[in-house]
Length: 387
Length: 130
Ligand SMILES: [Zn+2]
Image (cartoon, chains in turn yellow, blue):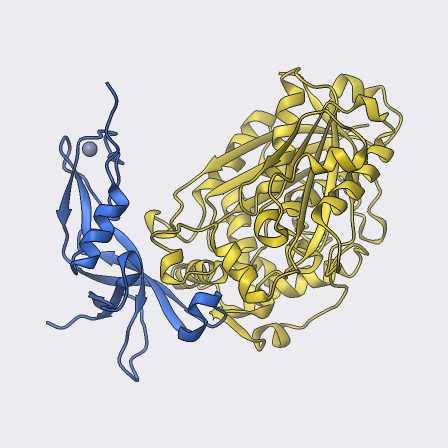
């Protein structure tokens, strides 16, 4: 396989964006990424689009050709990638694999979602379809409900309590203050988070990421080519994907996700890196408990220790491992298909000194962890500075 | 020669409709899976039969769902939990608890079935009566 790099990124504002299609959002993000990469349109060999459900949210199937159509790139392959909330990360990974294989020389990976057309209960229903239809959805499971069951099991085994979960929300909202593209630029307090509306006991409103519209995109090229380009760049150190049972109840341990453990271990092995080499990470905090579990499963903290570490400030900028400097899904927003791509966009900006007020100092390696379903799909990437 | 598709989900739903919980049992290694599976999770054999399992277990985790999908809005708030059966296998289900009884870890429960419904969604867990 060839070494691969990323040479341009784009991202729309995340939020409630009104009458606009996911196709327009993806087109905008892709155009921005292509401009940063300074590539000509005839250079683009293929597009991958991570998106959960334009069918349900926008009454549009077969969405992938719509993006090259709007970009004026007719006749190139364009492929929809769906892996629940890991659709975006997987679209980036498919793009990387297709360039690494030698098949393509320039690929645009986008992620997009237009969620706010539907009322909240209908969005909840659509997202729940990422769980097992026969054994979970038929009984009324929701994603907050699934992660609430993980949170309760984690609390029983390790004592990870509501205050520790709230500390994740407070921290990510604080980080999001400095991300102008985030859905929220608003600080919250532990008290406010703990006393907010109960969604799925023990998870409250502030334990949950919001419903969001938005898109993000990256341009992927062989590293040999990237090295000769003048603009910002980062090298793909490694990537890995893992799957697990659809139903939560079919896993022996629900205080963590085996998929994250497996994907992270493979990513470290392939990059010949250790967890201590990573300078910052964007993890999939669809719910506060998901961030804590991810940090333990990747290995930044021992099992059961991420909650107290978060309370102690170890995951803030300037802490032991800065986590979700972008604001995470919690504050940046969670337009499903866009999320995994936006994590990669954040790593790119940090590694190229383009992160403005939230710029971290002296960072060489950044990692992403993107989760689908109740952890049934995980995609991890590690990136390194290109200079 | 092609293999016949074994209708695992239908078999489970039919059993639930008869107020029974079934698992698959592997004819090669006797591993039982609940819900049933077409391929043995231990030895990978696809020689599978069905067996009725004890409809009894303990609650290992739960949630109370307040924000529900449209089809469940009328039932909210409702308690959804994962029950570990006596044989160690696990199932998700709704808890039906008497007034004043709160869910707790390791609570002993047994299966009940919602008569007005069809298939997997009929499963309920109620406190175990000796
Ligand atoms: Zn077997």
